[in-house]
Length: 118
Image 1 (cartoon, one colour):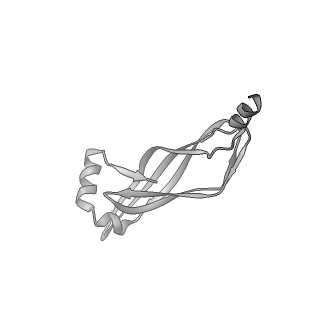
Image 2 (cartoon, helix red, strand yellow):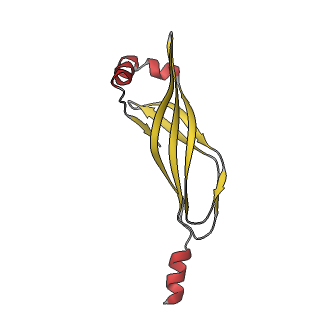
Image 3 (cartoon, helix red, strand yellow):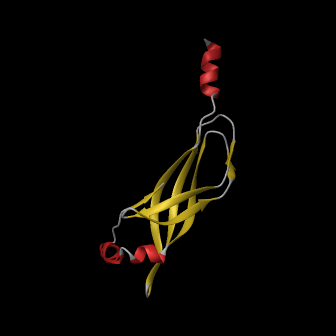
């Protein structure tokens, strides 16, 4: 029974990546496009009893169903049973934003917008 419990505790698990926030840091209206820069705050949790190393990864950013840009998490490592916050810079595609200019400007004026990341 003790061996079974030890195997359950020591079983390797994937680190968990959770998007905490998306902050708009720069917004420029350059005809015919819009340029916007963001900072994504991502929480990484290593539930394992040993340190981990992870490869680089990308987070895709969507607005109104359209892919606007990506943020890159560089390869790294993390201590056993630890959490870490990463702040990832991202730049949004001005051409894609231009397709949603009315809704985007309305959201900026309200200081509220829905962005998705995966």
